[in-house]
Length: 381
Image 1 (tube, rainbow, N blue to C red):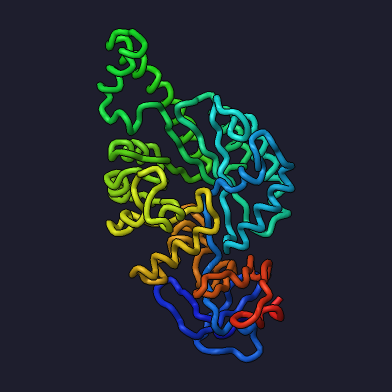
Image 2 (cartoon, one colour; image 1 turned 120 degrees about the vertical axis):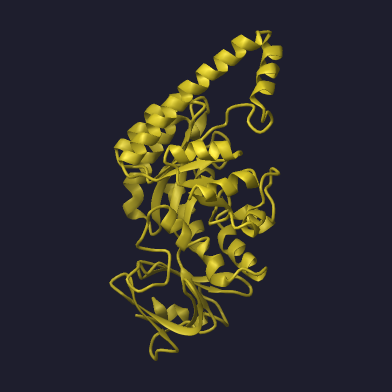
């Protein structure tokens, strides 16, 4: 089929009136101008399907209230509807393996969820992938993470480190003095204990990272706050720096050849909700490569088009949510309007911003009936 007369956002330029042909689930051809008899998309903009590498939205569907758990199949169906409405066609569901936490983020629960979601993948329209989050400061979660990796359930692994004192105590000696005073221990004993524990945690993290690399699973870091932390992550094989909290860390990640990922809600709002690095500031300093939904799926499209309104070229802004995340995750078969790639597509109205149709591998999976612009799409399925 042809999608005819849309505004096409290509990797390097925008075709104001053009047509795209789908065949066998792939983009077969792109041609300037209208193609008679095609799906009439005049007045709409066509972009690649959005690729999200880090989304926590499924957690809220699985546990809508504390202690209220819904069946995974039911939660996945509701979650998928939100993804498609936001134009997301490839979604990495974030599962936390965090020893000591209750509920969904407990390692044994995360492992069970990974198995359930993997079994349900064939029933979803969205290409569902798993992003395992391993908490370095709680190495008891390593066993479950390693099992998920070895069973082939994990598509992206991130290393988190929420060790108390980071950020608040940039100076390690100040942290030692604080703990010594708090627990009535000598500074020497406190320092020795902290160093030994840190080394143990680091060794376990390196073993987990090594297993992931051996299996071809890409690695990400989380909340990098210093250039030294970034360099450590780079030595472990990390290629995506998620949510760097300081500009210096983001710039070092770029210097290390890493992809810098920031939250789309941050980019949309113009600031971090906890006072960390602004995604827009990172973008102004050429230290922003891709956006992720984090906790808000609807923020991806709006963040990208908001940046375009503030001076980014539309292809560069759209690449933040399509091409770049796909490349960062090693997905070479999608993320751009290029012949030969998957026909994961989003037809949208720019003003006001609204998704009108979504295609996954050339198949129309969402078409919104309406009036005015895009109202003729109902005959395109």
